[in-house]
Image 1 (cartoon, rainbow, N blue to C red):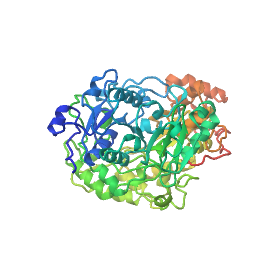
Image 2: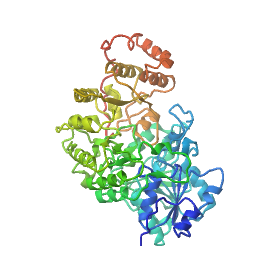
Image 3: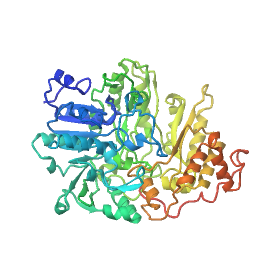
Length: 609
């Protein structure tokens, strides 16, 4: 019998008592403040488990230097779930320059409340206090550290997080189907040690029990000892497990560590449309827990937004979505989104504006390849707008946006998340005029990231010419408008394969096209991305060809070129321009620059990214 969903998941024993709960079935330990919104991992996982019929308590941002917060709800009947947060704790706590951030948008008032390496710290504390209670790790921090990985902040190859943290099981990916099965099986009396056959999970076994321990066909990749010492072995290991992330054809992957063997089961199968609808139609209050006296900054931009789908077939090299949400687009039904928006329109504080309708890439909603349901994404190439098997049509997205606009109380419906401009210009239905006319609030976010062909090839991004086609089409949409709209492009400096000359080409392109770079990103190597593998090894993991890796002073110079209008870093820009013999290059007339010879195609094009 299912329990009635509460307005908020309880955070105190007093709340539990009001719900007639003597002992929680599951306790979530979250690195974020508890915000009951479908954009926050703890809320989604907690409500999914509750929907399965089990009670859930939340310990949000506990003080890890004391036992008190971890003891406040007692021991759960089934298991502790460690959810370190929506963001890797080290990415959250430090800048690309490894400087500690002064605030945390996932905390009330922006205060700093989360430890470095939160997944391991929380797990150690919970295990020491409740040694007999099963412990399940999840969230993006654990998901992307499931194999031996290069850690930018310590500049070292580290163990799989499951080799360091005292957890029984690691859930990778989005996790809803996994936590449902874990809850049911533990409730049925199974031991945590027997849960070794669940898709989308990682477990460990002693070396003596390794053979025959996995329920799926198994691929062994180079061991921790090998990848720690040999960068070629690291690149090979990465490419091997990267290719097994297909939920339909992927094998289980094993990696030996000094004292244990880490085994990743194949990815969880994608959620069907009804399953995805059910997850996002759970009764989220869209508010922070009432115990907080200060607002949680991360809530405000997304409070009245809609998640239309998950997954991304873009396979950008610097993004970990391939290893987390996967390349298969899982879309909600239009009817479900209309129901959610209708409920949202009746909530206090709703001004009539839906701030965003999207996912990792807003305009992939409704796009699907017929092969995905049978064999998943192709193993030897990325999904692109030029693939004949992938119909590029925004019709379903346009239909959705039109339906949302007709809901009583809804005045405007915006696309606030980024879009793939290559899909927009490839669609013969030409959706851009309608999107600009009705669904752009001043700025349309796109992410070309770079324009030099050698760099974009390694990034897995479209060529410069495609971006220029989009800019021309967008400009055409501005004719006759009383209030002009703008493209808000995301560009990146310091990416593997990028030279100072490439960055000068990009800076000149930004100047000549009158682009405003509000979002400037210096490449940060984060766990389990193709780009991080290139950064650490100096190799393209799919071809093993050498890749230039900017570091140190060169990285600073590249970052300065991306914001060349900033007078504070003009000396670094001058240094770069002097190195190519053109001091007036960026500050002279437009259209006077010929791209450098480094802007050529690489000999070996990256596969699968």
